Length: 454
Image (cartoon, rainbow, N blue to C red; front, side, top):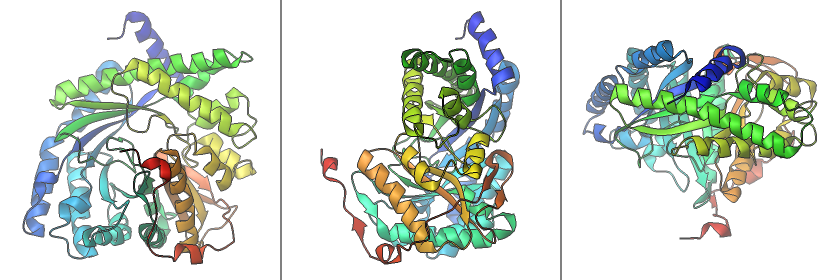
């Protein structure tokens, strides 16, 4: 438990530095919800989610009130739905029916999002997987709380280029179907390589098949706390800088551990992992970009950005691991453009471009996140951007992801507004040169040679 000094310090971090528990996410296995008809599967899914998660929001609010620690989101992750509906969904429209049931269940229990409208296709696609992927645009356009993901590659399997090509097409369709909301549907969809089974952060969360029947995962965030700590060591050497980040991450993780244990005890569901990720919001003072600037950069994107981010990410993980035996998910630093005020500013002034972001993703937690691009960007270009990012993950044995939003009707220099934690983003330039012939090739890119270790 926290001692009195830690309580006082934690209270200051909450009141002054935007420390929060970003999410309590309940993972729920739906593997026992298979049946012989679509209607039976729908009924089983709805009943299990509304039974398991009926007290999740209440418990979260109770802990928030009693401990004084803000808990921003209460969420659910489920078994990838292509596995659950595979035997009864014979077309994309059948999967959309499941999406609507998931949305209804999420609404019933009051969670912000439900993740796991997903398919795992890193090597190839079954018919059910393909139906699921093709259903994603309609599913995102007709629901409010569904988050979707597709895993298209891994270090062990290589990259499924057929899936990457199809996903590029589906992203564009989702953008068109939600064009009246600045193509918001795409903000709830992510493409992944080397996806972890225990990620509590949307839109890439799903409940892995290796997980328990139900589990509690907590995601903690605190870029404002890290920035405040670094302000006190301005001008110091790298050793002092690293120690400061590490000690601060330790304290933040302890807060998450406390919340996770309380939620687990009150819900009667096992505790899974703490994900300590510096996940920003559009609010001033809650920005990874500000942390990088405090380290010594004029803007994120300046020379030295990748090195600074590598150091930040590593020290955050080292501090978190010392604070909890069960650190997992995507722990480190997120660099979403639209959700980070200083990243938005850097993109708007030209300091930050997609190519620099791609370089930064070699050392951060995830990848190209919440990138708004012109609405007339070709499907093949979107697929090419995804393929580049997935290749970084495959070769470097790390999780990478792409959440990209072609904003229909808008071009470079304009702005897309998504609202809430999703924020707003300048439309960023993409390369005008075509990769269509490359993307149109069929098959998969083989796994790299260093993957053969078993």
